[in-house]
Image (cartoon, rainbow over all chains, first blue to last red; front, side, top):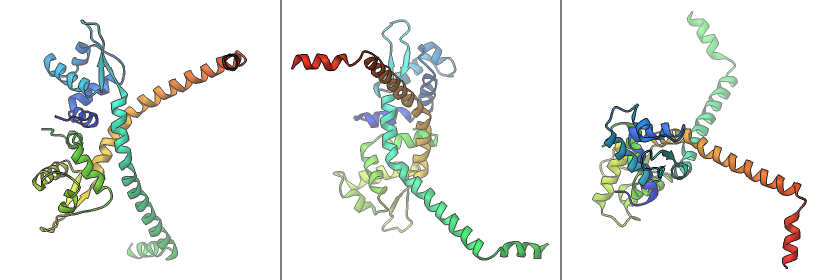
Amino acid sequence: MPTDRLSATFAALSDPTRRAILARLALGETSVSELAEPFDISMPAVSKHLKVLERAGLITRGRDAQMRPCKIEVNALKEADSWLEEYRRLWEQRLDRLEDYLQTLQAEEASKGKPKKEKNRGRK
Amino acid sequence: MPTDRLSATFAALSDPTRRAILARLALGETSVSELAEPFDISMPAVSKHLKVLERAGLITRGRDAQMRPCKIEVNALKEADSWLEEYRRLWEQRLDRLEDYLQTLQAEEASKGKPKKEKNRGRK
C-alpha cells in the first residue's frame, strides 16, 4: 500500500474505471447512483473505487447521508502534474533536437540546388 | 494487475523508490549497480522495481548481459502527462476565479478611497 500522498494518487489513477469516474466528476458534482449508471459494474464495486479515490484525496464526498455527492478535488491531480512537469523537458529537448536535425537536412537540400527534382524527372 | 498501458504507467509511478530511479535516469543512462548505490535496498529489490518500470515502458535496458544499462523512455510519461493535461483547466479555472475575486476586492478598496491606510495610522 502506498503511504505517501503522491504514491496514493498515482495508485488511484492506475485503474481505467477510476479515471472514468474522475472524467465524469470533472464535469460537476454528482450522486453515487448517477455516477454508477454508465458503468457495467455493481454499486459495491463503484463504492470501492470511490473509497480509493477519496483516500488519495482525489475526491471528497458530501455529508448528506442519503446522497453523499462526489466532488473532484484538483490539488492531488495538480501534485501529480507537477511531478510530471519535471520530465516534460526530456521530450521537449527531444523535439528540439528533431527540429534541429530537420533544419540541417533542409539546409543541406537547399545548398545542393534541387538535385532531387532532377533525379525524379530522370526516372519518369 | 493493470492491463492497459496508462494504468501500468500510473501503477509504476505509485512508488517513491521507482520515482527516484526515474529521477536518476532522467540525468542519463546508467548501470544497475550504479543505480542501486544511493538506495538502502537490496539488489534484488532494485531489480524488481526495474522490472515494473520496464513492463510499463518507462525504461528500457541494454542488451549487454553484464551491464544491462537502464535508460528512461519518455513516451509513457508523455501519455500520463497528456491524460493530466485534460484536468489542468480545472485548477486553471479555479485560479482565474480567484484572480477575478482579488481584482473585485481591490476595485472595492480603491473606490472607498484608502480607508484602510487611515485605520492603520490610527493604531500606531
